[in-house]
Length: 96
View 1 (cartoon, helix red, strand yellow):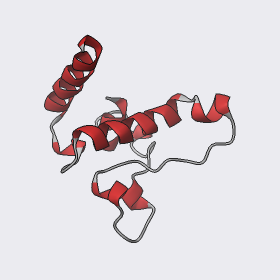
View 2: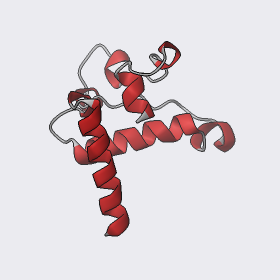
View 3: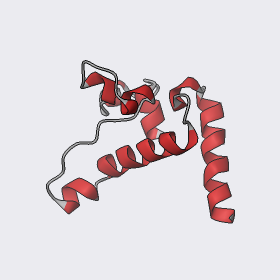
């Protein structure tokens, strides 16, 4: 929900530019940009890179949006509907 709130500019202003969408990096349209995926930063260490909350949230957002929103963007849903969808998806995977 933190990534959704940051991209939707719902949370405090300091987090509005916390994540970079793929379409903000290139001058051309990529598959990642089509689905509002986030740019994955280069990492150099595990403790401050691949294991960081920032990095893991980007990886999880991109995977979740790719797996569950193949033809649209998760940002097209209003927050309550997105939150409900996330809860159902996570519970469905836990109970399966």
